[in-house]
Amino acid sequence: MEESMEEEMLTYEAMMDDQNHNNWEAAADSFRQPPPAPPLPPPRPSSSIPDPGRELPGGQLLAVHAGSMDRKGPKEGLPMGPPPLPEPNGVIMMLKSCDAAAAVAKAAPAPTPSSTININTSTSKFLMNVITIEDYKSTYWPKLDGAIDQLLTQSPGDYIPISYEQIYSCVYKCVCQQHSEQMYSDLIKKITSHLERVSKELQASPPDLYIERFNIALGQYMGALQSIVPLFIYMNKFYIETKLNRDLKDDLIKLFTEHVAEKHIYSLMPLLLEAQSTPFQVTPSTMANIVKGLYTLRPEWVQMAPTLFSKFIPNILPPAVESELSEYAAQDQKLQRELIQNGFTRGDQSRKRAGDELAYNSPSACASSRGYR
Image (cartoon, rainbow, N blue to C red; front, side, top):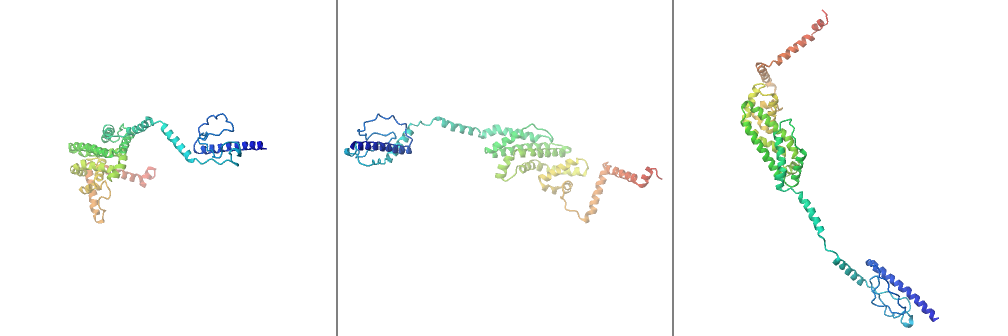
């Protein structure tokens, strides 16, 4: 009877030891992943006392109850009933985990220079795209300068072998790199220098060629603006309109007004009035281009010759009144006499052809043409 009770107690103790071991393993797994379990030592006799300082595979100390001295039942100090749970040792587990993290941090290799090299490489790639003021003066502006030269000196209808895409790209990059102010200043200086040369050439022109050469200079410049303004549209939008509150086309037209037209208006206007009094001394297209161009440059110049401007621009003179109809008729008759004096007989030929047509379409003429009498 006594031997059977001893065997049952041994079986119960072995089962509880396994349960306690499993509980400690689960608690250790909840905090960190345990390393591989070392090989178990050879089994000890059941009568041996477990070592209080032995560490379980989970990294925890084995807590031994003070009353448990041997695995031999109540006679040798083993209390009746299930063994008590091990005392909580969460602090020990946390300290061990912190020590393990510190050890890992100390054992981790120092940052290699490769990461620093990668940062420097990306920074150097960014710096390679920066356009310095020296780059602008030596590379970008010379391209723009050459293109502007060709555009300002081209004749109407000429083909210029320049890459508009390349010029626009240069302007775009310079604006993005904060060179708008310098580029605008260079553009104004460039065009001003060109217009000053044009003005000197006009001053050296003889009177019989003065009107025609002024017309060529005006038409050439206005045609060049049709290409220059679109090429610098990015600078116009993000610098001139935004910071200067102006427009590039208006600024460039003002340059021609100040450096060419204002210097020659008092020499040009008498020649235009003289050419008006002599029909076809200047071709009508040339006269129209100059008058309309002067009105575009400065509308106030209409006051210098209202009658001249009114022939090419509507609503310059006040509206006609009935009391002045006889004066208008006298002016038309004077113009017709001047045309006849200069050998222009196109109106007479027209009236003759009209009379022949009326005679041909008369009933008698139609009857005679058909053989009727």
